[in-house]
Image 1 (tube, rainbow, N blue to C red):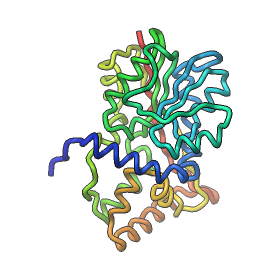
Image 2 (image 1 turned 30 degrees about the horizontal axis):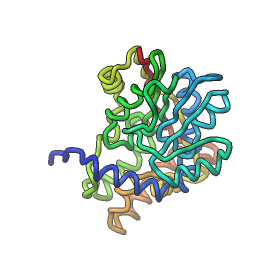
Image 3 (image 1 turned 180 degrees about the horizontal axis):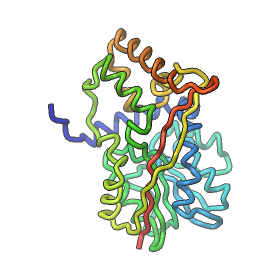
Length: 275
């Protein structure tokens, strides 16, 4: 059956509701992993002292806090009010605001750098977000974002999606959105950035490892701290969900190393210049 075309309104509603719920679980589930991309992301955007930096889809504020620690002048924005409250509580000296990546509340040319750490996957209309990032950058400013590598490389995704295919139903009715691994393809990153007006595009892999104290925690991380995958899991029958949980635990156990489960989860990092 052909995939349904994306429904931006319904997909945004799914993502927003999901992050309102998952925000308080995100740090424990994904925080140790997604922090690993922060320094390469900021390096690619040339974030340093005095650089006016915008962190879009800022989540708990990992990239924003790291940029501030570098001496940058930082603004940060997320569409989830719960995520914004969380970021403020963890970084009380910084300003976080609620807002839309696809309609940024800033004037043209406001920033020297714009970054987004794993936010692109959660946008209903990513091209709009790219256009907005381009607009709020001044000429010579830099933009950088991260996404997950393909599931064959980002093994955690490969494990859970394979378990759903084998033991559950991957075709449950969810609001259709952009393909989750669309920007895992370097050529797709290059194309959309150039269409948005960016130049000097550079796309590369960032090695990352997701570490757990027990193999069962991989399943729990997706169940509590994700949105699309969580929705897919919640739509399964109880017997299927139990079978998926068991399969994920078995497969994750194959990555145990001296008592720690170590799962490869590389990121794709794309960076570009506004001419």
